[in-house]
Image 1 (cartoon, rainbow, N blue to C red):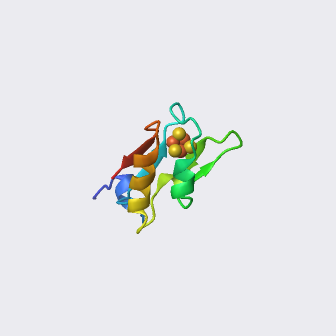
Image 2: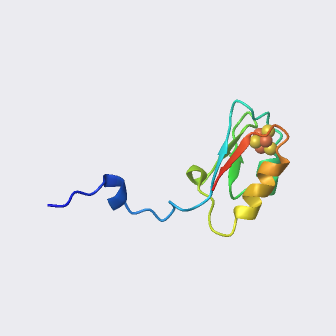
Length: 81
Ligand code: F3S
């Protein structure tokens, strides 16, 4: 009998996608990320950013993710790819 790792059997359309994450301990609410990539970021009532779509960057928006990260003066955006 063969045994499979549960994660191996879990289908994921996004497993190989770039991800972004806002480090809330660094974010100071400059909102450049939201201005540059509203498809990827939103801001809360205090003006601090958070990532949309659980951080998964849809295909074609990778450059916007990099642009947002490069323009955050607090270096609060982390990219995993
Ligand atoms: Fe925060 Fe940087 Fe965006 S400071 S609001 S993550 S540009």
